[in-house]
Amino acid sequence: MIEHSGEWTFGTKLPIEYFDRAFETGLSDICEPVPFVEGPDVEFGEDTLPVAILGYAKAPTRCSPEDFAEIVDTAMRNAVEHQVSKLLWFGTDVTDDYDLYLTNPSIPTVDRGATYFATVAKVLERAYADNPHIDPLLHLGFEAAIVMGIGLNNLAVPFTTASGYPPDAVAVTDRNSASGVVVHLSPIETVTSVQTDINRRQVETSRFAAIEFDRMRVVRAT
Image (tube, rainbow, N blue to C red; front, side, top):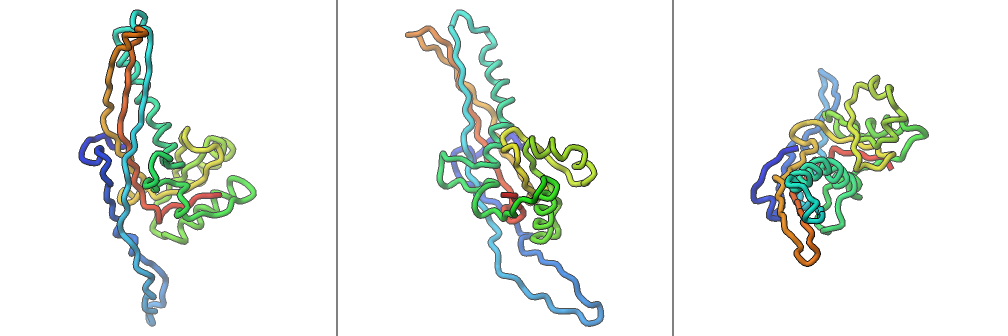
């Protein structure tokens, strides 16, 4: 996660380019090399939009502590990972223009295997078939990670879990810094006020988030 502000927090699209999408690889005889059969042209660019993460709390004015705003700020920081992982997996229904998420219909998929181990194997096999230069990172729901347990350590492929993923989630992205998942976060903004008619102190917090990754290096199990 990268915390920074800038024009992107005003709702403008973040342009991203992945020039290694044009990379191809194969095998050939040494003495009689076979010419490369060029694949179709690919688009190098993606756009991602920021969305707002909001937090709110209120308490009776006389009962709320002096550090009420700081308490809410801490809760907001602790909630960000959950909200960001939900955004990464499910996207958002706030705007129709947001489409860079792991369950987007444009993301390559494979059918699940009979077990979680078989499903992970199929996801990785497809990922390497599509992009032999991928540095895979598995994204797993809590159930998937618990069921596979120590077997994941024997796999020697790093994995991550997150509370915003569904329990049976299985997907793979690229760890490469040029195409992996990057989360942009703005600083938290906090506004405090008092509802005088009901004598309540309220705290509203917000921060913006934008996610980028190369959708051509993602595979998800369905």
